[in-house]
Length: 176
Figure 1 (cartoon, one colour):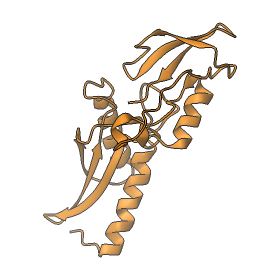
Figure 2 (cartoon, helix red, strand yellow; figure 1 turned 60 degrees about the vertical axis):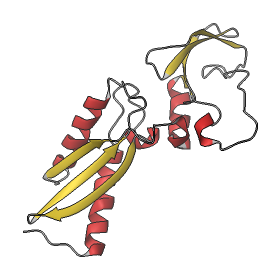
Figure 3 (tube, one colour; figure 1 turned 120 degrees about the vertical axis):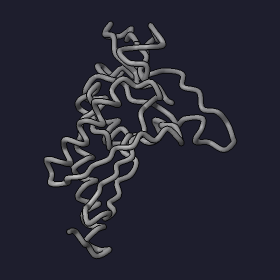
């Protein structure tokens, strides 16, 4: 029988968050689900004398093929971390936005060779001018002399670009 004080439960929730936060994105393994902003909430409740962990995740888009792998990896990580009852919920509203990505995650993308999103998603702005991205910086050489080759790259979240300076192709994580 598990009974925790509110302070103990909060500490366990922070521990569970820390474990889930380290789960890697299966499509871009240098990023964690926390870096991406896919990890939305972790809570613990006691029911029937058992500690139950609930994790909320939001996919980068509703048809994301990696979400099942992410869910399984979160469950495995938490059970390996000593949490017996784990439920991972898919939360579609509000929809994921690149605004939820951490600055560390954007930096990791650039180091990995993927141009990170530049700007804020339109859904995040209530009103005012719309920012237009005129160029995407090449993650290889830093040039702004780039062009979009295909609206969709290796995944639907990314577009395929080419650098005219170094002639290297690269993915650009779209602002969503």
